[in-house]
Amino acid sequence: MADAGPQALCAREPRVPAERLVAEMVPPPRFDSVRFDTYDPDPTQPSQSEAVSVLSGFAAGLGGAHASGAGKKRWFSKKPAAPTGPRGVYLDGGYGVGKTHLLASLWHATPAEPALKAFGTFVELTNLVGALGFQQTVQTLGGHRLLCIDEFELDDPGDTVLVSSLLSRLVEQGVALAATSNTLPGKLGEGRFAAADFLREIQGLSAHFRPLRIDGQDYRHRGLPEAPAPFSDEQVTKAAYATEGASLDDFPGLLEHLARVHPSRYGALTDGLTAVCLTDVGPVPDQSTALRLVVLADRLYDREIPVLASGVPFDKLFSEDMLNGGYRKKYFRAISRLTALARDAKPLVSQ
Image (cartoon, rainbow, N blue to C red):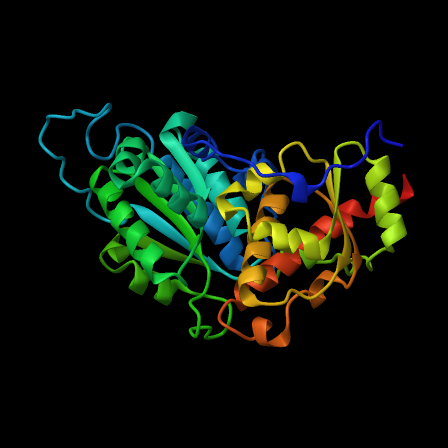
């Protein structure tokens, strides 16, 4: 048995200073060691191999002098001319085709020191603007060689305008951009690709992006067995007490706690955990709760924290209305990622 009982996520109320938000704008732990040569293209989907080739060339082209023609900032010098031609790529594909792997590989491959590259989700970027203010964020990121934005949120018009304005300023400073995005509510189309929506919503920035389509199936389920069935409450509780660094919460209580913690703090909520154990998992009651759970699932997946659960299987978390609605892509991503983490947690029961 572990020396101490399991922790509880519901007992944590993290505070995240702005400095941490800036320092953490790097690929998350799950993607810290990924590279283009560790990406496993599906041989039946040639667009995946093509994406690796195009992105490798894009990264190589970001070497040398800063695109603005300046190394360090010159605060009183004449404003540099905006770079011409596409200075960004948009990875256009369904969930589970490896877009984040490729985006992180681009960050790693770009020949610049880490302090001159930034990587974060759309939510993390808006949190940074909220913490630093718009002008300070421009100053903080304006000297960067590259900014990677994972899961650009097209479903919030206000935040989309805010970030588009920020990116416009950064492009003027010579910052190269790379992004993935979700699907607009009511604009599901084939339910997989969102390039037209993305380029329309960022309006004046569209000329700076080259859409790069990536076809394929969810790699987390490619050739793998179905997710393990949920365990009993007793099994989950016993595993939590036997696993050092694990947390133990009942699912309904955790959902209530997430409503009291800003999503920007969900990463800090999981600091130091080796596993998350949940009892009484059931369908989420409403869309606001569901969207908060999606953010938590992303943070757990980024940090490779196994999730052991009792109750209903993870593919029963979201109602049919949710899975057929405007946020379906987020919900399917959450199901896919929680399923992968459930597989990772299976050995905990046999300890």
